[in-house]
Image (tube, rainbow, N blue to C red; front, top):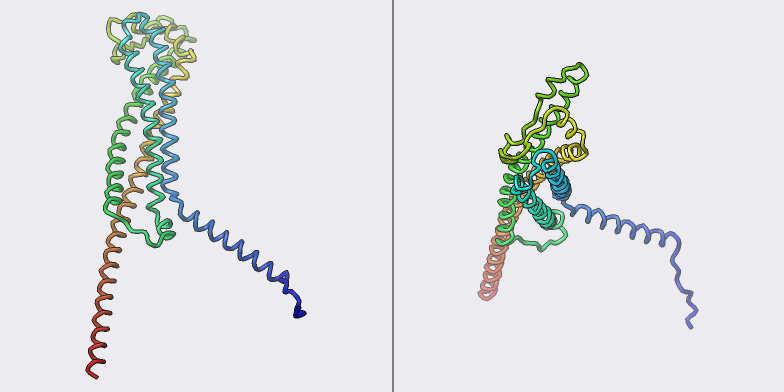
Length: 292
């Protein structure tokens, strides 16, 4: 043994190592948080919320509408058979819309992650390709088409809100007149569903008047369906806003990819020119040395 004592770290050195580890973890967390596409994340949450409200509330409201029509406006099953089939078809379409937008929202969120500048800083050798730019352009076009389609869905979802509002306003007007004693006027206040084309003209009774209409407005199906249609319309509007947000994000990402590809092409050309210049200078030096 040489008699040397083993070296031991002082408490100050241990504290410095711990501080460096904490600083490294903090910088890593900040770098990871910087790679999150917050704009795409917010648009995805808004899109999921809007689609969920539209599909869930719309499905339940359609079921309540069928119950109201079969109970009060079209008591013969053959008169509203076609309407029942259409509503069932719309409910199946709602299932498809919910599934499609769940998958599409995840794809757009993933595309936002891979086109965020902070993510590209983590991968210094990242280079855009023609296939990547074509995929981004395809998403821009598809989101534009879906946005126009959802504008139509938003307008279509406002139709049942308008119909239920007309019925509700008639019931409110009835309740304001009934205490005065205008019983005859109340009997002439009717709502004819046949004029909207929902049920055929030969459906019986097809309309509700007076206290019958008031009883319909007091049912839980009417109250629930009316408010669910309002929420579904609001969900469709939120989905339109989310798609517009996605469209702006995708357009910015596509422009970024285009600029990045041009920058990489410029850097490649610059590197080639520098290599050629270095080759020329090295050859000239060799020639000069040979002459000397």
